[in-house]
Amino acid sequence: MVPMKPGVRRRASRPLAAYDLFADLAATPGREVIADGAMILRGFLRDEGEAILRAIDSVAARAPFRRMVTPGGFTMSAAMTNCGRAGWITDRRGYRYTDVDPESGRPWPELPALFVDVARRASAAAGFRGFVPDACLINCYEPGARLSLHQDRNERDFTAPIVSVSLGVPAIFLFGGAERSERPGRWRLEHGDVVVWGGPARLAFHGVVALAEGKHPLTGSRRFNLTLRKAL
Ligand code: MD3
Ligand code: FE
Image (cartoon, rainbow, N blue to C red):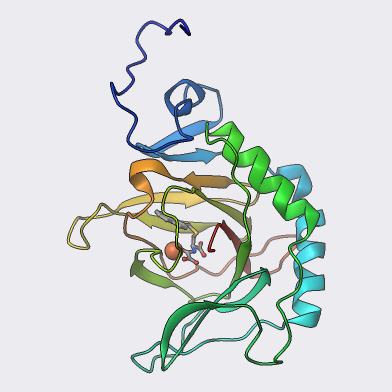
């Protein structure tokens, strides 16, 4: 038997695997719990921002950022690209993962080893075991760009967490509940902050408020977000 820390309650039955240490790790300084299963790791990658931005540049050299069209015909305000075995796209036919970049017909660039390592370290810091991403969506926000409330549902396995990395100009992140109608909470995410979303938070509604004007020494007026996922 593993002795239980006093004051830490665990579920009698664990509904979702690989998430059993969440409550203990949430008590670490610099951690903020958004909801059960969703944890901010403040400044987790502050010292690695430049290296991650260089890796984003090398992905974008082979698969340039582009603004995609939703099935309803709207052009998204954030520009996106992907790396990994699967890349998330949207067009008039729907939202889905593809193994090739539709703009070039070539496979998406490989996941940089640094991104795989970041996903492993961050998910472990939030108590999720064995997370290996195969997809990374990279979002680029200019002032005014936003992401309306949505769920991430195009992945096959909802037991895997999602790791998101914020770089550049800070943004206000919206975190709602299981229903779109639930009024979302607001969380400011800054350069180097990482959020891990899993367990009961995996299918929560979320979005990003229109980016304010700002200046960051490494990205100028822009914000980048990496979303590391297990898509396949
Ligand atoms: C909460 N991107 O690309 S990832 C997205 O800042 C997306 O660009 C946001 O949402 C951005 O789909 C932030 C944060 C995120 C990702 C998945 C989640 C939050 C989540 C899944 C469940 C709950
Ligand atoms: Fe999302």
